[in-house]
Length: 420
Image 1 (cartoon, rainbow, N blue to C red):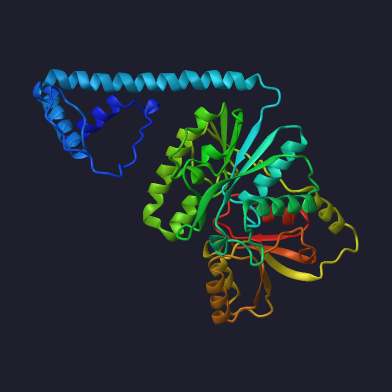
Image 2: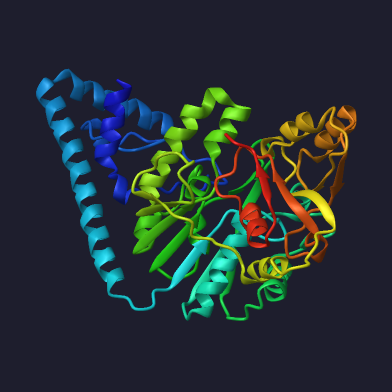
């Protein structure tokens, strides 16, 4: 019965054209229904939801009682589905042909994080927008906006933003100081919330409403993350070409925190990437297999780090500090492995730079194990206090293509990473 009801609803409301709207509840009680000639003749009229459900059950019972009607119903549903898929397929082919003829397509980049949260999807998306704008493209960068009360859970202390304008100014200031990029590009914000359980920022509502008027090329940073709970417009119908850049190994996170849900995460990631992306770019082959995907490092490092590496290669250059780590203070980043390795060892010292929701627990575990770790607030490799360190230590087991490791190598520093 439930399966037949679902088939009937699909037949009545095609997926590609379904836009249901519910009227607001009236402020005054509706008058009692009156007996009409249509009711006497047995004509079905929609009334209250409970009456609608009863009439729908009667209709389904009549359809299912007749084998011929069941076959007709199934045929209608299948034909409607095939018609919808054909319309989407040929519409996308026309859009891709139109995109191939564009000399300078407008680019929209949608990401899952923004400065001052120093994470890969915040920094790399901002730099991508700046470099494309410098190359002459019209670029729109769409980033999440979370309430200042929730910013306390994720942003560094003393760097909270009271409104989107303040956050935009902070992002542009950071970009001009680090990279000198001055090419104009738009920055737009979509509403989001910080999910403490997942340690991630999740969009609220329909993100496609906030990306602007461009419809050429859309780059979705972490497309699976953006679309886990997406209930709005179809990205592939809003843009001629949609490219997803996969940054994070969510299967590894799931195996560490909720191993029983690994198969669920794998299935949902494939589902949303297939539904919302025309092409997928994985930063490395350590990520799960995804439809229409290829592996390519599309990030690289900034020129300033390569310049520091050339200076370090000069004869007579000496590093005055020892080992260090830059990254979020999360157990998934391998801090437990680092503490276990240093426990009982003498003369080994590592400085940790970063913030995170597990910061207090990591510091407590380090104190209990009596290991020589010092903790500092988060910063990046462009900070001069980092240049004197010689060895970069990265114990993380969840890295896909660690930006900080690549930057340290570019700066001429030996790197130690966990093999997994």
